[in-house]
Length: 328
Image (cartoon, rainbow, N blue to C red; front, side):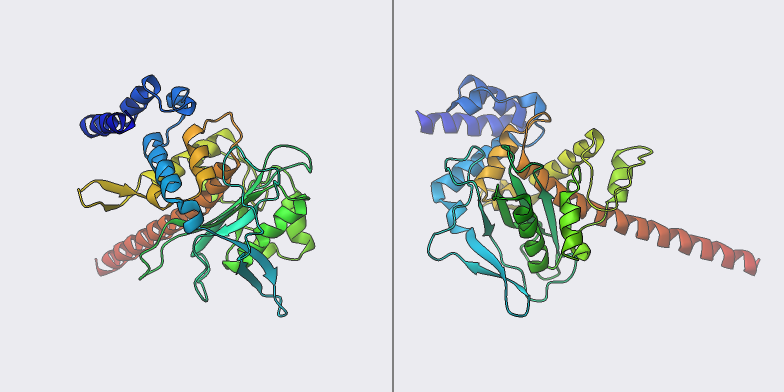
């Protein structure tokens, strides 16, 4: 029966080419409660593809085969290192709804940083939690962008999700990952404890500045000035959802039958995949918010490149016109 239903779904997607049509069918003929109660209208992400990846990750245990729990520490020279947890002592939080009592979490690395990584190759998004008591998790995601000659690009290379014994412990994890991957940390700045932690540690250079171009693109006449991080206003969240959606749907290859393969195929974090499937504007989705912070960094860099290109073009046009007038 399962095999038959999977074939029906495959044919629906093939004929319609529309994920919403498939989702409507899945709600009528669900495999589980989560499919029956999906709110299609509130989620612009490709839920059908995400669910396929969830099934693939579970079937092939890719979350454990691809991800390595690590301990982050400073060596005698104060350089941040990551050592694999070979004794299975660390307990990562795998699912959106944790099935473990220990909520400290663990850092998981899918790809270790390249040696002498250039500044800007990696982006880090950090969604902190506000109080020492509560249900939210802290989430840190490391995103690798594009480097010439490297086939693996625009992928999540590390993550850390948990609720350790103190806010500063989670802040420390974000800083250690920032130093390990030689990059700045973009954080949601509703509370000031992240900035205060980096100030006390004299590590402001690892805290990402406010992405002004992203803010101005998504909020007209914005007057927010907080120096570091980003405030999650409705317009900003809409932009972040768009950036994530575009990344999820980006085609990176085709399989042997000519079907497109998207960036979703390189997500091995079950908790993130589950959050993306049930995401809506009103819920609490720590992993999605952390990924969104990294996307803001990527987009800010793209906007800066576009500005510089337009500026150079405008200058070149001006100089050509002036030279023409001189000749006249």
